[in-house]
Length: 212
Image 1 (cartoon, helix red, strand yellow):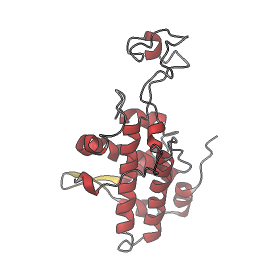
Image 2 (cartoon, one colour; image 1 turned 30 degrees about the vertical axis):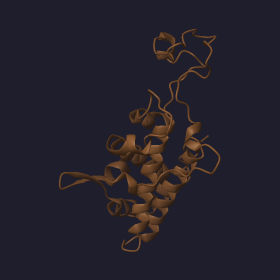
Image 3 (cartoon, one colour; image 1 turned 90 degrees about the vertical axis):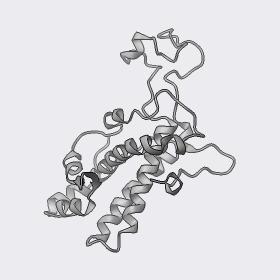
Image 4 (cartoon, one colour; image 1 turned 135 degrees about the vertical axis):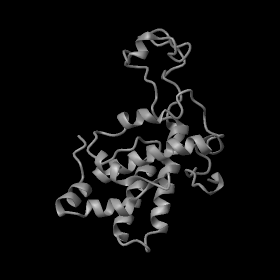
């Protein structure tokens, strides 16, 4: 995969990229924490922080580099869906998937945590995490060279727990992520057939979730 062909988060002139709003350290201050008193090495030697016992110090799940890889994954998947939309038997379905990917990436580009509001957005965020995991290994250093470094970069496995509200979307992951010729692919055509097997399934897939 050529990193020059991958989309990058937009950076408004004269202002930092939105992804740079995400933290790179566990401590929220340069001074020692008044609760755990052990922030000299960013909580690396703090037993209390390791157990999430300090309300002030939190190991970040989203860092600028981690968020950037999610953005690249989301925009790449959305672009692929739109590029093949007219050739698909269900172009509206592909448009709705692409829009879900774009909504989530826009939140990240603004420096906000993604908030999936429906099963489709929950599924898309799961796929973004999975795809970003692969991209970070292949092109992460090339794409993120100018972004702040963190020892917490690319811990994508944590995002399944911290960003996804529940696991109701996981049956759709199994229907989307398939293997062809020994390679993993995202089969959105098969997903479309599964979702539209019944009206009740389609209604559940597209309905907005209660996120309160």
